[in-house]
Image (cartoon, rainbow, N blue to C red):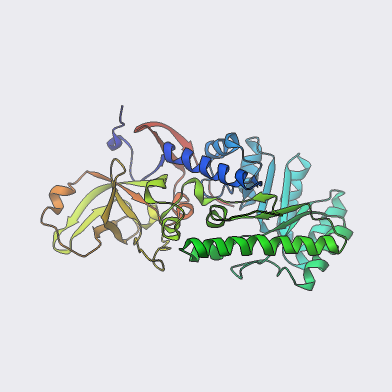
Length: 379
């Protein structure tokens, strides 16, 4: 029996469980076929039931982006956690507290100062804090170059100072700028080979480096080999989004997260349909703007989830969304086609950013609103 979506207060974050489950299974099978473990990044959904589905599919541990996530997931029974943002001295007591309570927390550093702070805390507490060294494999963000001399210094500061080198990790954020199979495969191989190279250099210097952790959704779905890699981290695949559609690793029919919006008005002379989902619901993320297909603030679907490709969310105020035709046409039947009170589903540019606007998901299975799943925010 189909749910009456009009009973759901809007704007609302909807999760299609059929798409969600398919996305989870696809990624799990892909990584397993290449001989690595999957450590999904749970920052996208920040939701215990979603992480449990990933765990049930075979995920080995989780990745988080905040220590609040680590606390929440550890309290829910997830104990193998990688905090994948470089740790700072003011957060080490929080990390240590998790370790002392039995959490298998891993932290990350990419500087000698960071390594020394972790080593000092390890030595003072009598606990060898498991630490990964972040490697820069594409110039996208943080990390140490794999051939840099400081890599070995960081390793020695950790190992000799009382911490535990858990391994090396990297994130190929540059993959988000690709849109061809060849380009994605090239970035995936670059990510793999350079992170493996960093591990080899540490080992050659007599330092332990048991784990090699790589990952992004585009590279995980594009890599041809993961030789030398022990685990893969990917996150947005669980929902997918329009940026991933433009990258080429999914289609709009794979996007499991949408925002349910209600039509609240029209500007017929402008060809506008006004909804109650503005940027407070969709976020200000315009990640598709620099890609081949610009979806404005989101793609438009009918209330049953069917993509209306000629329409997009072209503008947004805080609580008002503007839906219009991509070609700027002014339809004669605008009011009749989108009557006041009718509902639309809007697909996000960036699932992580849109999901962050909400405190819960309304979960749909076979067209039915089955339950509410809590989501948490903050640091």
